[in-house]
Length: 252
Picture 1 (cartoon, rainbow, N blue to C red):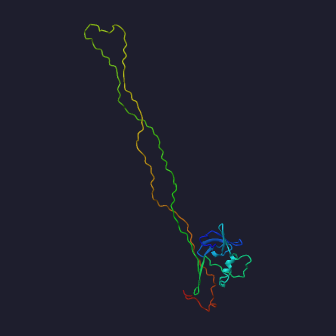
Picture 2: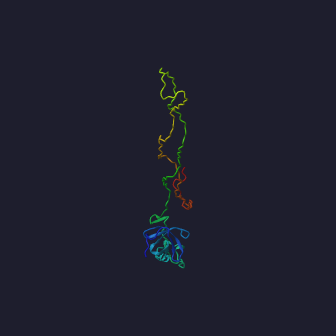
Picture 3: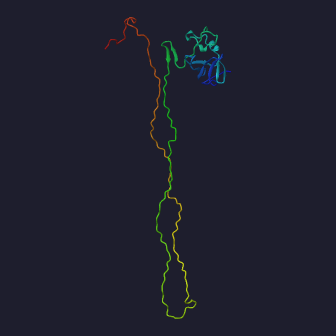
């Protein structure tokens, strides 16, 4: 089976065919994949897909013997492979190449020598707005009582007694008993006030939320990398340089 960047993913662990752990995949290219530096690796290394022998449970079995054989006749300028890339018993007799480091990329020019590129990183801000609960507004409806006083006109009946003189006719009134005690009962009426209560709608309270735009202050600490150049070369004396002094020396 042939493996490629579709079957190999970053985060997989790489071991030799004898079970020795090599490292973890950090990036996949078209022809090779990058293994991160660690305790056994002084820097990141590029390994080829065609030297993979097995991929199982997220672990890659890598043939270091094939890797060393493929790089046996590479020029002596590349140097031997690190100890992590040697199979047990292989020794150091066979020269092997080390892959180009990923962190510090190099490029050689016959005229100017070797060019070293070191990436400098910085952090950038990512701002997002998240809605959260800021509090509550409670509206309580209370019942208040007040006494209302009012006057309502009413009517009632009273008794009016009048004495009316006789018409002068001495004839007795027919049907009326004479000289008998008699009690008359006259019913009187009056109006009274009865009060009833019923609820009616007086007004309504409308409650709604309104979004307002305000300026919110925020801060964050960002990091960035800078290159500090230190020249550790010894400054040559006048005798070593043949009495030569830099232009402008001694000027005031």
